[in-house]
Length: 284
Image (cartoon, rainbow, N blue to C red; front, side, top):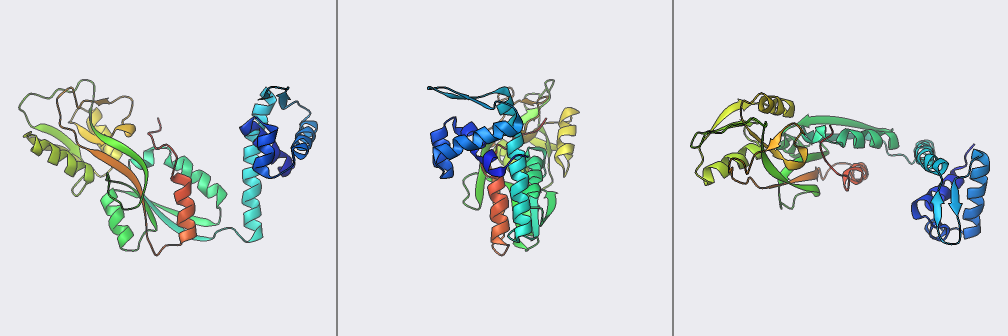
């Protein structure tokens, strides 16, 4: 019913709000763009774009068509790659730190699988240091981990700062050891937290050790102690308590993609491109 060429012209106009810019983007003549829009409006039996001598605007139906057009074209392109034989095939072993898995990452991976249905994506969730060891052992092709800020090892997707977190009712007695909830050693957040406390002469004690972010958050919510995590991942019901109790700054962290140099470059590049540039934040 809706021709892909017409949908591409429509999306170009919708995104640039200019027939001239849309023509330049697609390498077509402006009359061709106008013809595509007219045919699409005829097929839809709706006015999609209003334009006068000064501006171009989408109608409400045009806004709806833009969403449908993106979905239709994504499916069309995926099918074309699949049946043309040019679609990538094979196994891609991807590992992610467990707290990064509670962000928008699952949605990114879902979109990736829709675009590349012939790639067998195998997901491993764990702690950053464990994933890095498995990568070096050749057991993973690409990992998405929390890494020491500024280390030139991989592709930095996002930079963040560690924060001390606790519940609103958290009480830390002056001079008493800081009750610390953490991952087992070795762990980047654990090491940086302990190093920061000791550098500032603060004593500490481990009140909970857990291998999963769900365990860390459950212990914090139970008031068992405080924890360190990237600021952008702190849930709405928990608080940054760094300043309240004069806790020492822990430092910065990079959310980093690190690849296995022996892995399939094309597949790793495709997944890297899907993740890079996307905001990595906690999903409520």
